Amino acid sequence: SSGVGLVGALGCSVIAFQVGAEAIGTIALILSAGIIGFMIFNFPFGWIFLGDTGAYLIGFVLAWLGITLVETTGGAVSPWALILLFFWPLADVVFAVFRRLASGRNMFEPDRLHLHSIANRGLQVLARRYPGLERWRNPLTTLMLLPLFLVPPVMAISYYGNSVICFLLV
Image (cartoon, rainbow, N blue to C red; front, side):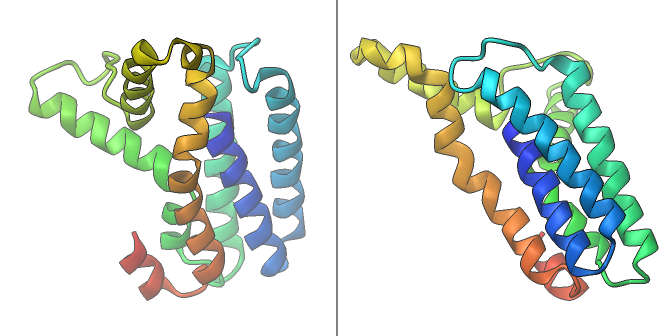
């Protein structure tokens, strides 16, 4: 969660500075610094817990920064670029809602069918064969999924001003 938030905050900052929205870029950098401070104590073994409140705070600030960036730059930033920038958290929520509705489950009940949970369980199965892997399962899950989490924001930074390309990439 903090890694995806960091990528989103840094991407928002890069785009903001490119379009001359220095205040938004600066706030995004401050958020990035806070997330990095958390990650220093948390990665790789999770000594402190971000929790729902921390994740919601990061998500709220990023959503606020993104919407403000689109609204204050006179069309220089496509709304579709924001969807790319924050693709994984948005996709995770949308798929969780559809998955739960399709199975007749309560939309607000937790489950273990998120991409990171599935990857983590795959490493758990692998750790049965290689017990030394168990201690590293959570950080390896993060490193394994990192390329997937980076591609949409990199595309958003590359094409933030072109709505058609951003739409097609989404």
